[in-house]
Length: 472
Image 1 (cartoon, helix red, strand yellow):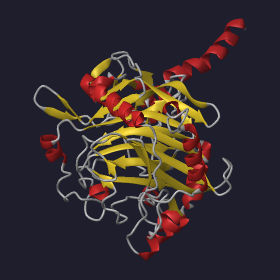
Image 2 (spheres, helix red, strand yellow; image 1 turned 180 degrees about the horizontal axis):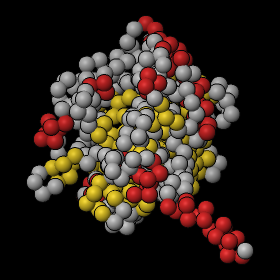
Image 3 (cartoon, one colour; image 1 turned 120 degrees about the horizontal axis):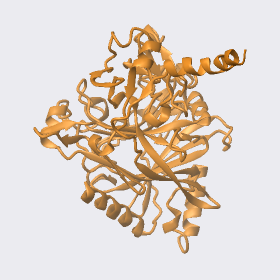
């Protein structure tokens, strides 16, 4: 009787183990450290020892005990069903230098190309921010908050995209008995494009489903053009779609196009680029504020506001000039999205839906990539930017810009007006900063209004990023 009882207690665990996806042992998974900061107006910024993880879709997935047999794309013999596949396949660790990812302190550099012994190969890394526990994704809740970072896009030409964005992924990476790897191995990726990937949440995608969730593109840019775009969906959290729900029609579960603000596309062609108001030949700071109708974190998101800091100067986004309906609009709000006829955005709840996602918490991601299908024309060509419609050909980029890279650093989030690198402005400049932050919060600063901050801030950013490049 006692033996039977013991077997009954152990058997469920044996069953779970037999159906669990395996974690490989060929390459140890060591997450690159990236210091981030959480800020308040009263207490300044506090550093957090966070780290990065590349997603499961870019990993080596192989048969257990047989590294030469790939499970990606899904092997029909090993994966006749999800349970068998989870038992038969192992997800490996990554050596991050081999995918073009380098961190030092608060700086992350990502390269698009790396030598492979016969020339160059595209590595196009994408990484997500892990919490201090190194096991789960960090969830950012940015309603009535601001998010700031420094960026160097000087090595990103036409057709490149160095992106920083948020997706409403689950903090655990949908960790489960069948997916023990979870966020620590980058599972659970989703975005508003609802891509049909071979694996979803660490399990084989045997139904050709799409992996969907709300997406907030804080930064998609190269040195010639930039865009900020919210993409709402009709469900909270991570979910899958089938058929028409994965598309761009009115049946679509997510707004793939979004309601985006691109200075060049809005008619302000001398605002962003080499030698322009925001001079992309050198590093600068990007500040994005998520403002609510009642100035509380429980309120409804009503406006996404952008400003830049470069060489001690704070510059707000210039007003659009493209058509009378967009005149004097320099932020993403209801008026802006209505003037753009962003019908899918409004059908899916617009800023209110996006704000609800930001209240629940979203995961921060970084990527660098090219686009074979459209040469990134939507970002930097035609009405969107000054690039030709063929200059974004990935083969051309590899030949003409083999050193393509982007560096993000000094990533901070917190209360409105708290992330302006206060460590370099405390003292004689503190009163000026406080007045500026209050004016920004109240919406009283006009386009191209500036406040002089110590020049040392811009110089320190440039020196730090130059040092990073020397290490590569």
